Image 1 (spheres, rainbow, N blue to C red):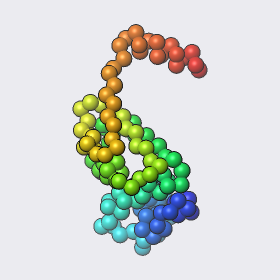
Image 2: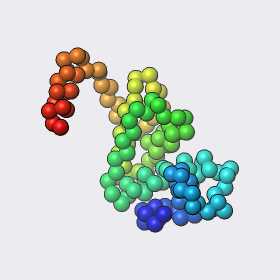
Image 3: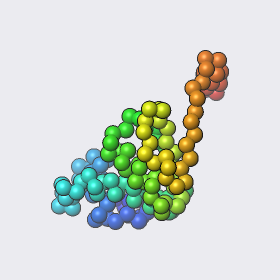
Image 4: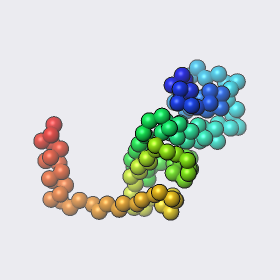
Length: 132
């Protein structure tokens, strides 16, 4: 809780929802409005990343985004479209059939990767095994 407030999150508005999200059983239920759990958690997650970026360069790497649920994708969409997020780089990986709604947002660059062929895959595997 102190770590959240040290980076600038509002102790009453954001912290209870983040603690609830991570399964903290000691959350004071009087600070949580059941009707606002979704929107406040959404807001708190965005503020967590943005606030961290203000204090230290931050890379948010999200892999296999094609498996994410609708609410998670909504949070990511709002974070990427947020104009004021200095110090934050959002890097996502997903399959071609995933619909990234933020591709036309300012500052977004899309890099399509082609699959490795059999020979390239074998070389990559040998290099990974050799490095261990």
